[in-house]
Length: 337
Image (cartoon, rainbow, N blue to C red):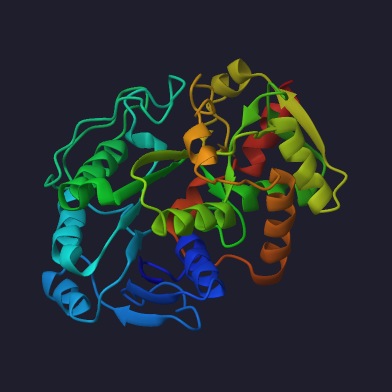
């Protein structure tokens, strides 16, 4: 099996490259060579996927059974279309890493793989779409929906779309789980978003990588929600963070209304906390039927702490600074209870 990974140097792209090599596959990666290191054993090709000449040079480099695209999150649909049309004759199959944000109903409604998608043309530029007053839909969701249509335009039934919600695990660059781990390690009383029994569905990066490779070798098509089919409660999640860091910290469960009164930003100041009804109600049964297997989230927490304690942040990323409540603000809220 010969695959091309667009990206391939950090987090999901790196996990995909490493696991593909472990399967004995031939792996080429295409990226700008600016973030992270090329995985030992891959054939690295450096270039900018938004530059047609670089894509033409890549296309001349060989043929592949499949492409796994991990690097389109910041791209306009027309940039995705440029890659798919340029590489179409060199590739048998396209596996596209998308997002649950492509759905019209996210995060307000429970979702299946057949839920309606946002409308965005495959040749749209970076301005297409909007972000709603309540934070949904998002410009990002429109753009990613257009990216899916760009892939479909070139590959049709030879394309698969993986739509994860939140990906955690070793190598995470956004900082959600590392922030909770550091907060747990610091100890003392800390804010935990009630209700404690609220279930969440983050999925391990290694499990997403395995499923992406399975899809690269498959002949099925269409969309797959890649969320943890069992999940965990927020209480279990924080208990896992305390156990992993050997901390005696004490979570203080604070009701959503109180957090909102104090202006705590959902999703960022308290990572993974969001009150919308559908945010953690994403059905992944089609992916499970196709082979998605998710390890316990406690294992993801433990392994992330081991990686974090040993290596630290993998790359500088602007989203890192968005996550985590300031200690002064947290202390003020706790004191008001």
